[in-house]
Structures are given as structure tokens and as C-alpha cells.
Length: 278
Image (cartoon, rainbow, N blue to C red; front, side, top):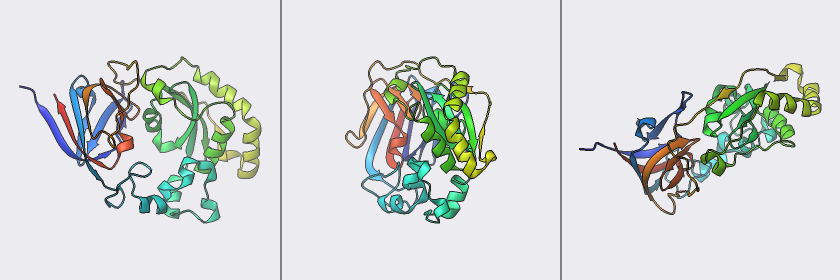
């Protein structure tokens, strides 16, 4: 007789562990379910129509910035526009929405990195979020390039790199497993050479130690995927509140089902029933 896992609660971003392959957990309310062992089994996700803000627990018709109600989206520092565009950080202008949050999350060491998720890309993250950020983007390899004093400086260095390389992942190619082989050590050296004038200008203003080029080793990552999809069909809980299929893999923050893919992070704060026939 088949066992059935049946839990209800609010979805959250999937916690990850840098194992080989990456180990995934799904959070549904207070329940945490290891996912890797469930690959190959039928999964069903039913959205009950309720979205509750992950900050204030207020019911909201729409999720903003992956899990917030509109009032929280408008007032919280973690939802400000500078989170998407870190070079626009306004902490030093005294206009941060929450200076204490800014001190913890923005005025701290960040890493500017190169990654191979669907090809070469540049990105930034708090030093404490390596390698979680790389996994969430579905990178098969990543390497630190700069360690910088603040999020804003990381953003400015990223802007310099964007003249030469993308800062976004082609998520469809990523989910098909279409990643070219890249020598990230060589790519890092080439990029540092290209952006040398911009780095020199930033060091002139902020100090030599504010932006440090590093020769730290990179990290290769593999993902628990049994079958790569030939075509990418996305499930949308807002349009089709019941999603089912055989779990064939997990990459980035996506579940890969035989019926399509679903971005779990996108549905943070959605109240769901999650069932697996194990």
C-alpha cells in the first residue's frame, strides 16, 4: 500500500544544502520535507486561494516581492527598489527605510561573482549567502571575483561588469540543463582586467580595501534531476490552482514535473496543500 504525504500550510522558499547533488527541502507551514528522495513520485499542489504576507500575516489578494502584502512592500527595506538595483542604495543619504536592517544586510561584506547557470553571468550576494545564492540561480559552477565592503559597492562593480556579460539567467535554458563548459578562472581574470578602470575609480573614492580582487577557488554544483524537459511549460497557481505530476527533478527554486515546471519561490506566502504518493 502506498504511503501518502499530505501537509497544508504556507509555502516558503526551499532551503538548500550544497551536497552532491544539492539537497532540497520544501517548507509547507511548519513542516519541512526532504525532497530529493521523492523524485520519481507523483506530487500534487493545491492552492486554496489564500495568500498571507510573510512579514505581517495580513491576507492579500496579490503577493508583492515574493511574499509581501502591498503595505509591507511599500514600507520594508527588504522590498525597496535598491534591493533589485543595489547601486542605487541610499543608506548613506539617511533615507534607508530601516537603517538597522540596512546595517545587517547592506553595510556588510558582499561578494561579486561569476557563475555559469545558462552561460556566463555576473552577480552579487552577501558573503554569508555563498553558495545558497548560486544554488537558487541554478548555477552549475560559480567563482568569487571581488569581496567588497557594502552592497552598493557590489552593485557598482556589477554595473561595470554588465558592459561585457549578462546579469540574468536564461531560466528556460537552465531548466533544460543547457549550460556550456566555461573556464571560470580564466573568465574571472579577463573580467578583472576589463573593469580595472572602474575599480580604480571606486577605490579612489572608497579606499583600496573597499574592493578586493580574490583568487578563491570556484565551486561546481550538480542537481537532483532524473529527466531534463525538452520543452518548458510553466505551472501558474493563480491561473490553475491545482498542479500535479511526477517529480522528475529540482533545480534553482524550481520543481521539474513531467507536466511542467513550477517556481516555488514565486509562490512564497501561498497557502497550499502539498501531497506526495511515496
